[in-house]
Image (tube, rainbow, N blue to C red; front, side, top):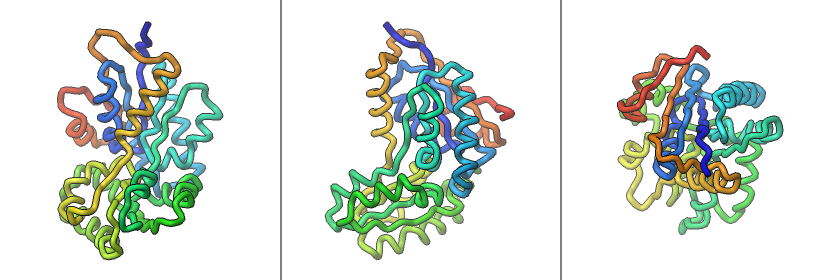
Length: 260
């Protein structure tokens, strides 16, 4: 028995494709529908009410596509809206939270850095996660302007490198040994980040853990797709950055513009 309905994913833009890649790698038989709400990026600078409204809109689009499970592939939307979404809709939701726990448990210097959006760092969910590790010094840094640069394909630009240096060098001086990426856009910056960080600082994100949790929830709800048919992988964006999204997911996949 199998369930061929698609896994739905949405993000405030193209960054959540880093999560999609992990899910597709672990669950290659699953059909997926990815929605990039790039027109409204970044969510990290918006109010909680705005984030909830946008998350509802994205969810309802994916439910209209008959998705069996929805991955909120956005740290800011997860920390601000997922409780509301779970109370309003019956479909299972998977959220994204900064990987503070594995970083804190493995830190030798007892100091870790978190690079995230304003919306994530100021959320109650993030605050509670920090309180779980009172023995760890957590250096928080809002990644101002990083998401718009990524959305525009400026991942390796001079401006990007200068911004990252201004955010990361103070963390290095405070002796972090883990850097937690608290935004699904940021894994695309890892090659640039590793040029700045010394080799003893580990970079960690949530992608693999989210994929494993997605598989667990599908199994628990008897929703896995065991079909031998080639999976259907659909991508939508409501912004002019179709070519950037196409480059990130691969030219073999079709990306469609959505007036949304």
